[in-house]
Length: 522
Image (cartoon, rainbow, N blue to C red; front, side, top):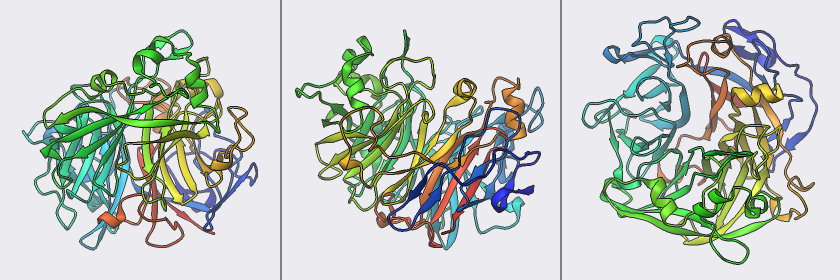
């Protein structure tokens, strides 16, 4: 490890990357959260260091080569970021180990200890790890929480994760089409240890390509699905849904309930359905939905009731729900009593796409309560060629939302730019105009992070084994005070990232698979 700009720790072999000049926009938060924009994304050229706004500093919380304190050696679950079942070296070899890609993060304070939990979305099997943030000995820092289901078998690789205080479970999402994808639960005790270490599939929530997962104060579970649509002339068709599961018993998600999917209505009040936009992916409604300053009525349609297994995606289409272009993750805006839900839409991740909505954006769903049957949707930030592939999302203050990119190697090449993390000030979005897709009133994307590319990711991108990804990706952006009670559900409290109780994390996925903790100075 070696020090790099802004007193950060760089990865082994990392070279100095983009310059760290102060320029190109700033974001001044209500509540004192202020960043100067990093001028440019890192180019896709060799090894590059991460570049952060001067008010942000990062230190590694965990990295891929950290050995687990309690490995499942028989199945290769031996390290934080590697599955070694194929017998290869950890990295930079033709037969290197499978990189397991630790993904979203959940920070919890349990039993007086400060823990960070994450699922792993790559490799031959899914598993869940816990980083003990209080442990200074790397050999004792990362623990395996679960890599087996209720029957002792491997469960799918995991993308999303959240903490459900009503059930005292980690809720995990597998981003795969039915019947593989779905939601799993791992129960923790009061000390943050697994009760039995088994991930139980929650059939009542359906099977689909879920990624985002989030609770509200009423005990509902919100799911954001990411399944890419079919390729057509000019891009891809919308094919993924936003869901809300209303449990029969919020303390027992196996008891059944109702899965609902979001339906958006046209200006004339008629619903926008999958059959319509998939038959006509150039539908003017898609353009209107991605136009800043517009809004549309929404309602929740019932997809399924009961406790048995089913295909959530097919059921949402049959129920007349409205698909979008790869929505990924969502979170409630703090200070709104769970009345505003923000979620990202990745888009087509290609500059060659010509279809409306191709660059995605950040959407706001407003309701009178989290359990309301209807509401309104509008776009809070519109993607463009330089700001697209939006994935993870978190609030750093009531009006400041952090959004990170997962643009992919293809788009990195097209624009010669690696991924970035942005801050959007959405405090004034209700006053936006109605004139264009990039209205002057639209919130500015202020870059707080220009992600680099470590040596391991550079090796993979240049022709490493096909089972490992290439360029680094930003994922797992997470801001929390670790409160495991209902009062600590994300969105219940307004964050103060300058206070010691509030902590910020993100994962530099692929390559060396480093999870960073970010601290913010004023």
